Each structure stands twice: as structure tokens, then as C-alpha cells.
Length: 568
Image (cartoon, rainbow, N blue to C red; front, top):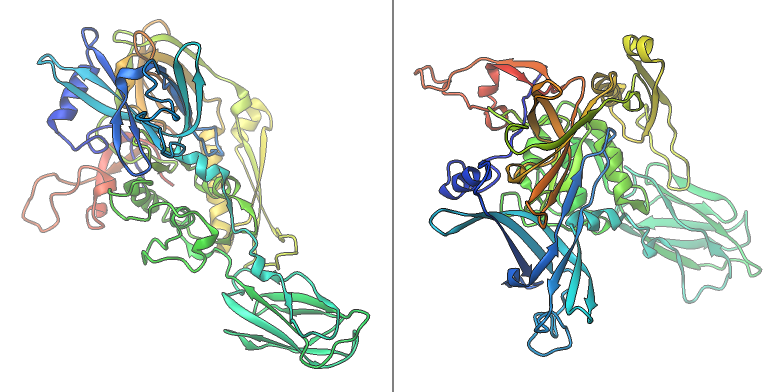
């Protein structure tokens, strides 16, 4: 069993451990008073040109990120920002304006927040990015409002694997017979990219006419008989030729193409998500055969990636390496539905972080030595909490694909596996509170389903503690999925650990405030441990890393002691 601890916002995410800029920011952020928050608003054109428009900023930019109760859902963020337009700087029909003669839709707005230091300089950290979706001009007040949404909206709005028009058979221009060929049906893990020609070799009507079926990769797999469905399970091809009033003649023909489904065999689920976001195979760093069927976000495998937080995928891939999945993207499948069904299996989250890049989180944050602390003795206000049995899950039933066999595209998926898990202690206390799930993903023995169901019970068999509070600038660097400690004298909370599930940063509030909702589930404070040394003892095995995420395979032979999140 591998165990992990809490994840902290911190130097590794914001400019490098121990950097002077970051330490200045942290020092100012921690002040109880006398710090001066600064807001910087920039327009980033489609060509990358950056323009500071802070002097025009009036209000807006309040941004919310949320992690839903399991099963986690993909969340997209949006915000409005209102700008003064007294000199027509944002009037797109005025020569010399920022938007004159340029495409401003899908250009970006970046909001940074920071502090003026005692020496008069300013230190800033990025808070959010948004793509301009709409401009609304207010002529009576000489203002414009830019409505922006983050990169996750592009993902949510997409459909994967649109059925290609080339899979519709085309009749030969010299055909004598006036019959038809039905739509082509394909089969995952059998269909490949190739061109097909179906040619009449025996003339006649239905039941008599014969056709050869030849693929550029598969070769000849016929014959097909007119009036009878033709099906090749091995080649993933199915169709029906039907004669018309004029019988088929020799060499009458149809042509079409087939394309491989986006599909994976025994693959790490986080690598699958990388593939559908970028169109690239994670391990080989090469274009997938079906890349045109998915998204084409930046596939760069280092921190220079402009669309995706690559390191978050490195960590996620490591944490979910205990199981692999076999499955595919169906025709015309919504990206949001596909990704949510996959994230469900490891209680993952996919969202846009403060730097504007898509970030993935698993059910367990990586281990760090400390966490952010919030207390009413500092800037925390409007504290409250709740517990409700409505969020309990103590009985789980999962319907899944138990057999490694796959249906043609015109057939319903066969779900031949069922798994039930229950927490009898919770059922005795609260009654049976069930959730049912269905997954098309396959893994030998159903390990992925058992793991998922057991983990749900572990986290949700008891009413979660949901804590809500408002804090000041000390919450600026916090993000969803991070563990925090909360202290409140009135309710007797002393360093209660919880995971941030929702955060709203109100940049135009006076004073600036951050609204946080945090959850403490059953498994939040599980023991973990590994034993090692931070000094070099000359044994060839030390020093070990200070956290699991950065440890080598050799380091992971050792054990460190503490408390934190559990990894299954």
C-alpha cells in the first residue's frame, strides 16, 4: 500500500523555491494589516502581444473554482471584467484602439494580484486567465464589459470522434444497378485506417449478386451477398448491400474509408486523458493515429507547455499506476461525458489553474511538509460549517464491462459485470444510502471497479464536515484540492484538516477577500509512513527525497512517518 500526504500551494508552483519575489509575496500576504493589494490586468492578443490595461480596470474579475462531490465533475470558470472606455481605447471601430482591426475573440485576459513592498516596488502573482468570449459596450457610461471563460470551456464544449463522412459508401460513377449500400459500422480494437472497395463479381438481384470486399490494409475479406448483412468481426467492418429495381451488373462498385477508434489497451488512465487533450501518445510523444478525432492542445512534455500543467500529469500518472484500463471513445461522444466517466474511476479533477493551464488532480495530493493555516485570530471571518447525511454513500453498485469483447458501432454495449460494496457500520447508523454507477472501461478481474467502490465508501460512509469561511489576501495562492488547517475559537476548531473544494477570489472587494469551502471526509487524516534520511550516509542510497512525488524508485524503498491523505 502506498500512502501520500497533503499538497501545499507553494514555491514549486509559483516561481521556484526560495525565490526573492515569492518570499516577498508570501511575507505581504501573511500580514494582518498594512499590506496593499495591487491588481494588474493584461490583454494577451492572439499573436502573443501583451498590453497592460490596468489603468482602465473598474471592477469584476471575481473567479470561482469548484471541485464537486464525488464522482467529481469537470468545472469551467468564467468572469466578467468592466473597463473604463472614456478615450475609446476598446472601441473596435475607432482607429488606434486596442481592438481596431484585430481579432479579440479568443484573445486572453490575465489578472494578477500582489502587493506594494516597503521600498515602493510591486510583487505580483498570476490569479487567473480567461479567453474573451463577448464584448458588451455601454455607451451611456463609456464602459465595456469583457466576458471571459477559461480553457476548460473549450474542452467541455467539444465532441470527440465525430463520425467521418468518408465512412459513408460512395457508389461508382458507372454503376448499372441502382441499389444502395448501408452506413458502415465499425468495431473498436479491430477497425484500422484504410480504404475499401466493394465490387460486384456476380451480377444479379438480392440473394444472387456477389461482391468482393477489399481493403488497402486488410486485403480481400469477402465475398458479400446482396440482400444479406456482411460482417467481419476480425476486421471490424459491417454493412448491407441492397439491390434496386435494376439488378447489379459486373464491376458495379462502392468505395469508402474506415478509421481506427481512439482506443487504449491496458493504459494508465491519466495517460489516456493526456492523449485526448493533445492527440499525442504520452509514452512515445508521437501523434496518435486518430489525433484528428480529439483535441489538439499543446503536447510539450515540460513546464513550457502553454495549455497543460505537465508536472500535474507526471504526478497523476505515478499515483494511478496501480491499475490500467482498456476502452475507447465512441462516435460523437461529448468530451465532458468521456472525461468525467474516466475521472470517476480515480476520483480525479480536471480544471484550469491560476496560470491558465489545465491541471489534473487525483484523489490524493502529493506529500508536502506543511499546509496553509487559516485562523480567526488572523484574517478569517464569517466562519460556519455543516454536516448532512445527504452526502453519505454507504452502498455502491457498479455495472461494468467484465468481458474483453467489443460491439459494433450500431450495437448496445454489453455490461456483463456487477460489483456491490457496502459499509455495514454506516448502514446501521444512517440506513442504506446508495449510489449506482456504470463504466464502459475494462480491466481484467474488475480491479478498477472494486478499487473505485471501496474508495467511495472509505471517503463518504460518514457525513462530511463542510467548512465555509472568508479570509483575506492570505488565501490568494490557495487552490482547490489542497489541504489546509483551520482554527476557530467559537466552535472549538483547532488545526482541523480539510481539503479545499471551492474557492472564490473577489479581486474587486474592499478589502480584497477570498471565500473558501473545505471538506473533511472520512479518509482525510489517515496515517502514512516511510523511513529514510536527508543526509548522505555514504551507503549509496541516501539522501532520500523530502517528498514522495520527487523521489526516485530507489528512494521509494524507504518510509517516512506522519499523517495525511491515503493513496490506495
